[in-house]
Length: 220
Image 1 (tube, rainbow, N blue to C red):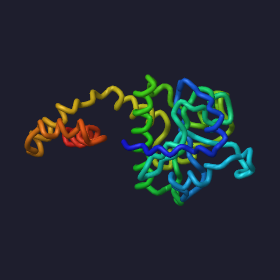
Image 2 (spheres, one colour):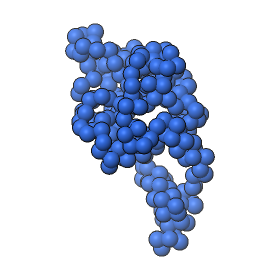
Image 3 (cartoon, helix red, strand yellow):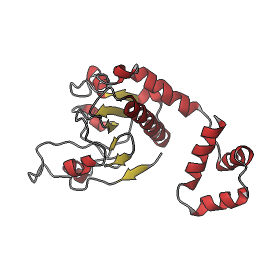
């Protein structure tokens, strides 16, 4: 998946420079219908200390049905939980559509959220057991009293256990190497010159990731 970095360098949270060793991932949703991931940069890239914004908040990322925007380094201490989870958890916000029953939007953010969690689990040696939503974190006493995401997921027959199970499946699935992926494309799509594509991956950024993703989809 593609994550676009655009750090909120004016936000006081970014400028504290405080770091964490991520021990978990917290899933939030915005409770602001219709405001998408790119829009949050202008909303939150401001300083509370300088009177530019009336709240002290910052999360590591926002995602919607089209894009994932990373607004803090993953190891920067965020201001997202309203509790001790700020010291341990990466937090990301799922943008909400104008209609929470929008099925196509939900299916897209479900997939994007799972992909982000899988990526973060691999990067920080976490498992699906380390993923919680804000409402679960409140029950554990490590976050403020919020309902997200359980005010939304059940509308589509989903819950956090199902979310974690899907992350688990993908973490356990053996990922194709670039050589294996190209071989799949040779056999299934009849592309030519596998050596050309292997060499192209050395010079074209993220081409190997794209090829592996396409081959994995084709292979099923």
